[in-house]
Length: 310
Image (cartoon, rainbow, N blue to C red; front, side, top):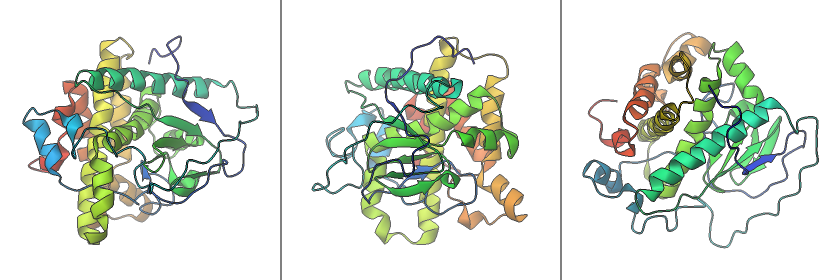
């Protein structure tokens, strides 16, 4: 990727080297890209359901008017009205302060901000930018305490993204999915969950999840994860058009999507697959939906909820 020298986001908080991260209140439920030892645990505190608003996308109606009133009420996810945002402590300067990987994620986050701001503006809406929190070992978010084993995750409770950058090393060494565009795809996927939170997909399910059985929960969760993959592809479409990508970059992202499919992970970790336990999508599905968004550049193409076959 030709990412160096481009604009960086100012919404990156560096909490690396701090124990626990310094945030603290319960609630919400995080959305994560699956990898590592806690498969199917903490990251699955929220999913999605088939909602009438998604149907409107394919009918050409403004998808940012989901759930009665556009952006109203969707930010903050599972927080109750009486909860107050905890005060952040200023992170001390550490040996991590100016490393290249931090510059990379700042740049990638900055590009997602530009792309989604443009897309939202085309519907007459403002895009509320999420913050990205870098941590080591563990961190406390509005969704509770998370460790590096959780993988990168988005917390709808505070509308923020969390990542231990050592994940990228694991992605390359254990899963054979290296490359800067593969790394960018991971972050763009979590930003995709933020978009879902803003337009109302995640909050709606958070209200309805208690009535779902495990099988339905897994099925609907696959749809929300694949939509986040598709939204990541939409972002990829725009940066490709702007000249960011080099030969082989798209393949890097597709390899990453392939390696973190539910079936691929289960085969690797336990030697067999249990389809009814899938909650992020198969390798084939994840490749398909990322490529769909990448080729179309349109959020209307990301209607995983009404696809004929998943």
